[in-house]
Amino acid sequence: MNPAKNKICLWYERDAEEAARFYADTFPDSSVGAVFRAPGESPSGHEGDVLTVEFTVMGIPCIGLNGGPMFKQSEAFSFQVATADQAETDRYWNAIVGNGGQESACGWCKDRWGLSWQITPIALMQAISDPDPVAARRAFDAMMQMAKIDIAAIEAALRG
Image (cartoon, rainbow, N blue to C red; front, side):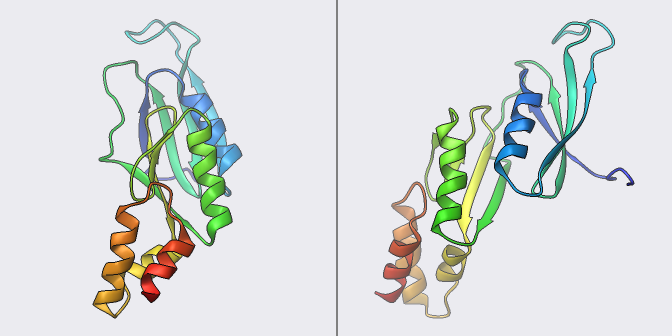
């Protein structure tokens, strides 16, 4: 297998390997690859500490960098996960929030390492792009009141 020519590099304070293993256990088509250890002392760690870890999240190649406390995750970057139904939406949401993460609004949440996730049901995207602008607006307004997306409530708002 040829290595990916482009990977998403995610900065962690010190838990890149733990995060990668959580993602691999939580999402399909996800895995942990090579773990590289620091060959010497660095400003953010000691010889032998995990420096980087290669991993895949739902088919997207990533590298986790244990870079220390200098930079933090922000909502400027997020993974958007399209879900097929409420059970899948609940499973991913509950895994992230239930593992030390936190809820946000409109289907957004953060994992315990501060990385943002959008758990987005396909039904929501269809509803807010409905050809009837009034129906789309009702679905959008319903979404704006939610943390985790409730597909039944979105569909009810769409119908009026």
